[in-house]
Length: 196
Image 1 (tube, rainbow, N blue to C red):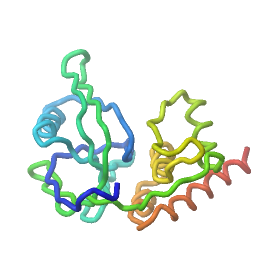
Image 2: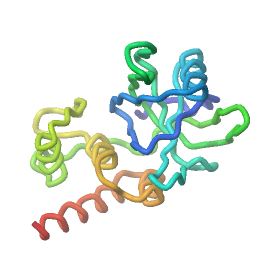
Image 3: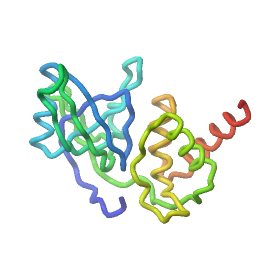
Image 4: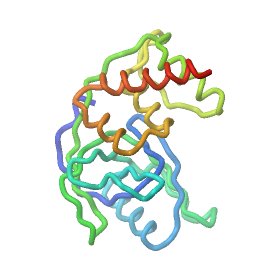
């Protein structure tokens, strides 16, 4: 992540209640003129921004909010009543300017956290594998030696899975290192262990 240039990208965007994070893949479905137009513009632009939105409709779409860049890997326009979109979330940025009329956002791409590794027996790693195997969810690779797991990858997967309020998630992502996120996640997991 550290080799990413701090470039500005003016791209179309989608608001998602599923908060997708870097080093992850996702399938999104949608229909209608606006969705079709956004996907078409995203294909032309080489990708799109994903904006986090909560279930109440509140979106993290103000200047300085964290957004994710997703490359469009495949679009299935015809096999269902909705368009199926396969995305690879590659990196993140901050909103620099929004163009609400044109349905685009200008974001500055940059790495937020320097990556480190966690031992494979760390509570966050162990519980993540337990949680995902219980619910039959396949996780992308962590890109680390077998006895270690990339810290950023672990944090991002938990941020995708846990129902953390949008404002809290944005504050964790805006922090300059992953340490605050690690502490927060460990507190949640340890607390849930005490309740079981």
